[in-house]
Image (cartoon, rainbow, N blue to C red; front, side, top):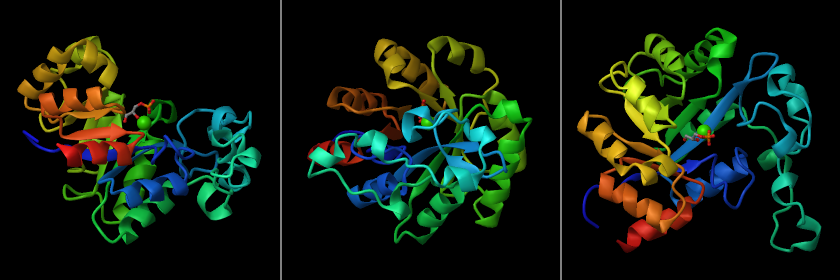
Length: 263
Ligand code: G3P
Ligand code: CA
């Protein structure tokens, strides 16, 4: 394989085969050899950071509640497994639900999993719509990182966001923690490129990069590492290798690691 091998980061865990953001999905990713884990975080009504992508719980827990209006104890009663395995009764291969593996995962529990793992694991934490809470998400996150001693530059944690404001806040609260400016459209990069911190990583989406590969080159030429999401096919991985991408964020860590081993 020519060039640098990108780090393989499991997007919401090994979420192609497992219910996203569950401990089951993260342990499967680590078993497969993923070098990093990605998770989205939201605040519960009683102020806990939990690993959930959507604002509401319809898609992944069959509930109409919003995460932000639900206490952690009530979230803990929900089933985050069955939506992914709707035919479990008829499918011998579907895993049986397990309270330890398939309930809501707090960020603290995920940090403990990473801390206890027998090799270094990177954790890419994405704050979702943080600006709504006037900085509370970032303050809670920085507090938690401090408790683990991970609010420094050698931290296995990096913080990602589509919100420039959120990243600026994190830069003040946890100086040195690597930051990833997520970019959805080439246009947003054009707007952001003058203000994004020189040592910030930039995270474009693979769809945008496939359409505008020059965007990746321009970002790299400006001196930023590229962490690209969500890279799930061989063609997408090849483009990332061509562009010298430093980390690929994927739902299919086992598949990508296998492809990389064959190069
Ligand atoms: O890793 C960044 C990527 O996860 C952003 O998109 O919607 O999957 O959180 P989304
Ligand atoms: Ca995400």
